[in-house]
Length: 222
Ligand code: Z5A
Ligand code: MG
Image (cartoon, rainbow, N blue to C red):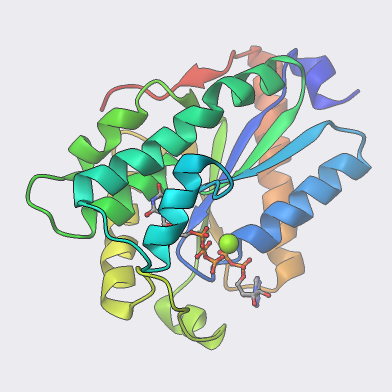
């Protein structure tokens, strides 16, 4: 029996972590693994650079346009709201949705800019009410291990000092309002070992939700 039959809906699974942590690699592996087991799966990534808002975000990240800090923050959030109804409908129809970065990234990357008007609580407001993940798999990788996986790319936030602030802020989020969502995975192990840890965490959450028949939640106010 698959997850949808036991739970009456699909799961919302999110991957988070710093650059190079292996989020996209592990998303693809999990999608593949669940499909092989006969689950219906949809893979989503944020930012979704294909929508009109996503194209503005893409230009900004590649340094081809400028945006005021609040404005780009709200565009990232709007990019999630664009897909929120589709995600809810897919989950209600029994599809498991796997998301590569979500509002946790939205909060920490904007806060890391150090704009005094934009603390974590302010940054989280526009995302309140979005579908709440059943589990957020946080791929944890040290700065030294990340550096071994190749230098930072050319995009706007790919600088060591900025990434150090992001790392700290992710730590704050993992200990505050959203702490029950997070499971920390040691992303410094081999791809296979990381995939095995992820599989076991997903099985655990699927079994516990099947027992409780918990409906999909909403991101609550901080
Ligand atoms: N951002 C934001 O500001 N606000 C928001 O609301 C959102 C995002 C949603 C673009 O994100 C930027 O947008 C991002 C946050 C900001 N800025 N930064 N910096 P993105 O998702 O498009 O970009 P990305 O995800 O930068 O990071 P990435 O480089 O794609 O990392 P990853 O997906 O975590 O890693 P990967 O591609 O799977 O793997 C990286 C390399 O490591 C690759 O060569 C793999 O083969 C290798 N790898 C993977 N796993 C392993 C293991 N286990 N061992 C060894 N090597 C490995
Ligand atoms: Mg990626």
